[in-house]
Length: 93
Image (cartoon, rainbow, N blue to C red; front, side, top):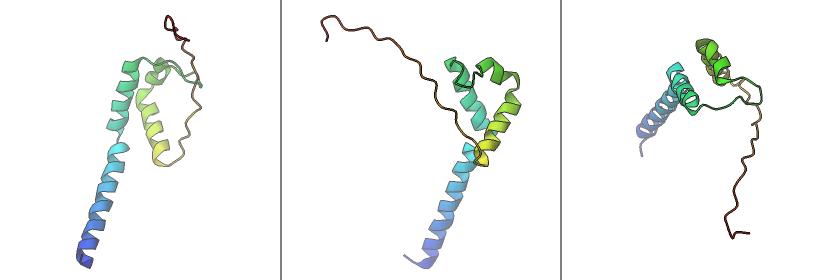
């Protein structure tokens, strides 16, 4: 492979990587993710913030979330554990 081909391949990889990051960090991507979360009707997390709380200032919250992800300051809260009782099968052990 010629050095020109390697250089072109490297440039293509950089452009592709930059494009993926830009797509991921777009506000539209965060809006689409919000729509999925809202449609799932999830409960409040460990921080107590409900979907309604987050939606009250949705544009600001999405922008703030996107910015913290983009500048690597985002820190996820621990997951809230919810135990779901399971029915035992008849005749099972």
